[in-house]
Amino acid sequence: MAYDFLYIVRRVYHGENNWGDMFIKTVDDKWEWLSYTYELPWNPDVKGESTKEKSRIKIGTYQLKVREDGDSRDAGGKGWRLELKKTGHRSYIQIHRAHTSMYIEGCILPVHFNSLSSTSIQKGDIRIRTKSLELMEKIEKRYNELKKSKNGNPTLDIAAKLPPKHLTNRVHAYA
Image (tube, rainbow, N blue to C red; front, side, top):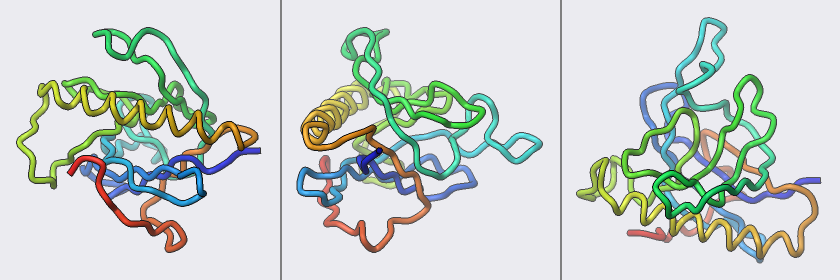
């Protein structure tokens, strides 16, 4: 048995847009806006599937499992993160903290800004990593709160739009 935990709405599914919005389930079973997300754009192979590396994964529902190795505050460690299960021909797709370079090969990064926001943040800015770590800590805290009352694995839904039942007040965590 699985339970709703995270929900990502992509601004564009096929195309060059890398940005989305991430929502997280509250302890009272509502959806709360958490952050923006950064992913690579869709890069199809000859079959129309995402390429083996350097492309986002398909829209769908994925169970999540916790992974931990290294301290996320170390230069090389990713620390606590969530790995998507059963991603088809792709493997090791994770939700993890962003590095200042924003380099990824298919993972999903929770970030506090996007290219549409009025911010002066550019790749290389230390605030990218610092704020992303704070977001991952919030995800971990909520995961620990919810697992006390839930059975099974948490899930991530990736969609092109937010269903009406999920509509929420989009109070941004980092305005």
